[in-house]
View 1 (cartoon, rainbow, N blue to C red):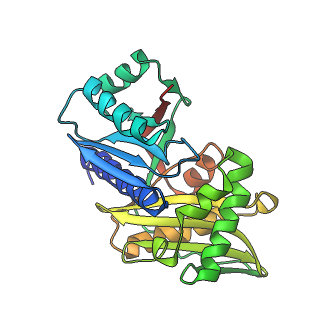
View 2: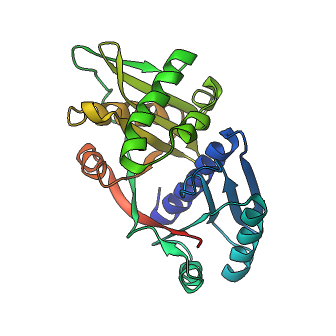
Length: 263
């Protein structure tokens, strides 16, 4: 993909991921109008992947988009975040700053991998299992709860409700995997394929198993499956902890997203 196509496809995949997470929550709502996507997932957590607004190609002004978002989330009684980025409309970012939205940091790298890697080979004593039944689904959720809840404060219930059934993790465009050390689930990852992008999400390793290559192992597995399902590019939004791992695997940064929370 050329750069412009890659950035647009990446945005569209992110929006599809955000829709998927919101739809999975028991009180989830997705609303789109005037080129503005508003997604309301868990009422417990106002994070940018749970309650927010993403504008790929607006058919209205930034001020009007923010007004629509305030009305939508206000009716639900929720705080929300706005996605901006290096390649997205600078007028929208200026508008959220002028409106007093709280910046959630310097930015999250959008990293891409252009070619399938060699197959993920688990070391001795480690097993990779695709999430395709309720046991592996429960184990994947447990990994996320032992990873994201301690490190980022994500409520365990949010992660529980994000994946309510096997279909939320396994389908024509969805796959997930869990790595087991012996019989203990220690790492997992998820991929959603759309718009030519294999969007790698929710890569987690339990705190006591970090530094042993499990995160790279499951990231490799879901990325490769994403290519096998038709993705032309694998992409992810890298955490500070994950970025050096992904770079070592061959991922490169193409842009950065930034998040602003309504106050």
